[in-house]
Length: 158
Image 1 (cartoon, one colour):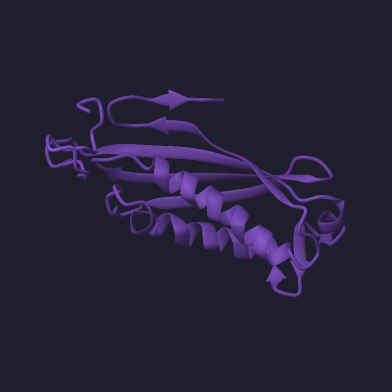
Image 2: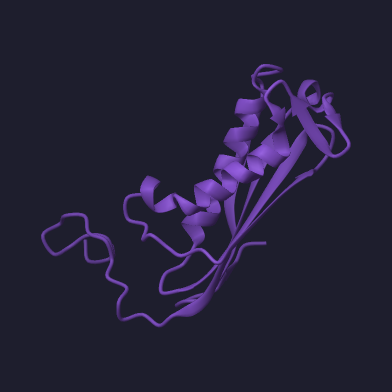
């Protein structure tokens, strides 16, 4: 069990102590791909989906930003962080799929991978919620970490 940083010597869960780590600029970028389908896309006008619940993309972006700020309340071992910036973009990949990109940045002692992944996830979940009256055939297909910089190691997954 010594390979796991969130397990103490008694085998119980613990939150990692980051007090000895250096403060560095840390950035994480996560992406999510979502199948919306032609039925949902048919409501697309002027670069926005509008349903009975309102503007889907704008509302989903706000929900994603809120989720980033609340990640430590959702994921037990995440540290509460002072987030410097969140940038979420939604773009259409084709006539049925959308892609969400969530970039999170801080100056801190721990990374923001979970915050970026949470932001991308909740953005998609909000899109689903706002469009489910049109179609429930939507699928959140892929959520992945694309890039992480700062801290012990940098990662680039493309």
